[in-house]
View: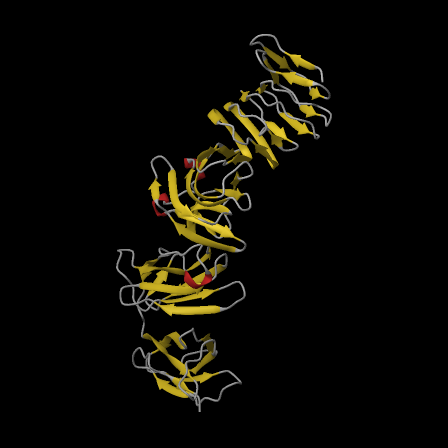
Amino acid sequence: AAGLQIAGNDTMQINGTFTLTNGRLLGGAGGTPEARGNVSIASTFDGGDARMAFGGTNVQTFQNNGGMIPTGSWTLNKTGGTVNLLSDLDISGGTSTFTLTEGTITTGANTLIVGIRNVTNTNGFIIGGLQRTYNSSGTRSFAVGTANGFAPVTINATAGTFGVTTTFTVRSNNGTLAGASPTQSLTRNWTLEPSAGGITTANLTFQYLETDLPAGADESTFDFLRRSGTTTTNEGVFNRNTTTNIFSLFGVTQFSDWTLGTLAPTAANVSISGRVLTDTGRGIPRARLSLTDSNGNQLSTQTNPFGYYRFDNLTVGETYIISIAHKSYQFANPTQVISVFDSITDLNFIAENEITSQGLFEIGGKVSDAKGRILPNVTVEISGGNLKENLTVTTDEQGRYLFDAVKAGETYIINIIDKRYIFAPQVVTVIEDKYDVDLSEH
């Protein structure tokens, strides 16, 4: 087929659409066609051995409809815009260097396939998928990133079957990997895809940007995380350098989606805890806290002698209402609404001022069935005394209940309001706080 050769080392800039239909582009001592507009290759094009380049500042497209690709060196040197691939860009037929001087090629769902070519980059990189061939063991760098910036991956293949059909594809993706903590993991991830029957063991090196870190994230705790199917696992780390933002992991034998960070907590290990304090910083004991989820389920607890409290076994992503009460203190913000995505250790309540008890006390205890088993979520009622109407509370997960603001010298009746059980009412005359008014089923 006839061919076109550009004289000497000249560069021919094509500002419009560069359509390659028939013939071939010849290299040799010839120059370089530099596409600054869209590139379209027909199925009848014969390729050639010319050098090729993308340049300019425009957003371009590349589409190969089945023709052959020139086998000379390829260069990306764009000071603006990007090259959007509408098909794979397969330049694996040549061995000359692929040079990423400046700019980006955006692959989308397609892939840039470079084969055994050397790849050098200055300020250019691939947004999306880059595939390289491993005809022998060793190290290949993948100059990938996203629209948020350059985040390369290095794969050192140490074991497997190597040859012209052994490839490895790396894709860089925006977003937190599923199963990783959204507050303590990178906001990017990588997809690692070895060809079937090829590389079996490799050492991985990831590099990230400071802007990939969520506010407040502690990267010194990050490990390699891998997601396979619906499961994300912590794979550890061999080297962690938070100054250069480079992490390494050796001896990897399974490949899929990866990131750096910590695992998202599961429902079983998420908790809310904190402290109840006076305005001078002294812990307040026996403050009563209740926690209610979006379905109306309620837990309750009391602060210990130093003012600490804790709610365990909470659900990630759930929104909770936490309320506090104490017979001797008032709180400026007695109710807080919080959505839980990780364990919280500093949800504190500060008392606004101390109030006099005015002869008011507390009555509490535990509720159990006839076999002595505690009964959570049972309604307890108090009546009589100075009360204008009966009051009810629900036992917590330890079967405990508590009524406050009962008056000294008054007599009260404590009863269970639950058709599943039969209890004898307890009659209590208050002279001080009583926390042992237990109720047991007959």
